Image (cartoon, rainbow, N blue to C red):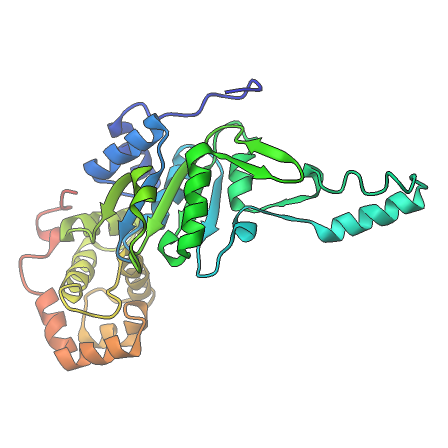
Length: 316
């Protein structure tokens, strides 16, 4: 580290990651905590893949809080190019500078000599992460990289290989310190192997019933344990079916919060019907649920054997 800045923070152990994440309301299993520990220790990007809503993006957010550093997010989309991700010139400010130089009587041959310098760069997420001057490296979240084009993926590969970029008018800019990089993918398309090879890979799956109850109680401590079990069991049953968009953990938390706001103490078909918009986001999925029999699914969720309050909090 140069410039007298603090050394990059490192987690002391895998257990420390589990503890710090739990303190932020995120229950990380041992495998995830191990991958995070290695990513930080080895300085390698972390590639998280899984279904939408399983908590991939949240990992980067919690990681930034746990490390007490800045989170810089690049949201990928089709048509994303290097200018939007890296930098653009501040043309408005450049034009203003020209007028000011003319007003100050700067020699005509020297007018505009400084226009293409770092002072006139608009830093987009990638450049901002590379040039961050914080006392700790930032967490760079490259979210839903599978939504970007293959051309952008190739460009990203080059940036992550050297953590430096070349701007023709300025030259090569190197990272003040290497950011912690987290990439996420929902698998809308396969990401090239060359990018994955530069990362540590981890698949995020839907949680087990016991873990989801633990997660829900960590994020929403005021929810009654019995209701938490019913909500998580209902979600577990839903995910067994082939919906266009199966609900994730985010929907579980939102739904439990909605049920509490309505004063629901025990799951019932009417409450599910009224709050279905918290769970399913497509009309076709709603229709499919009604065809399956919403009442029957609720009854299954209420069957004995899935009430964590009867035996205490389930182990994660």
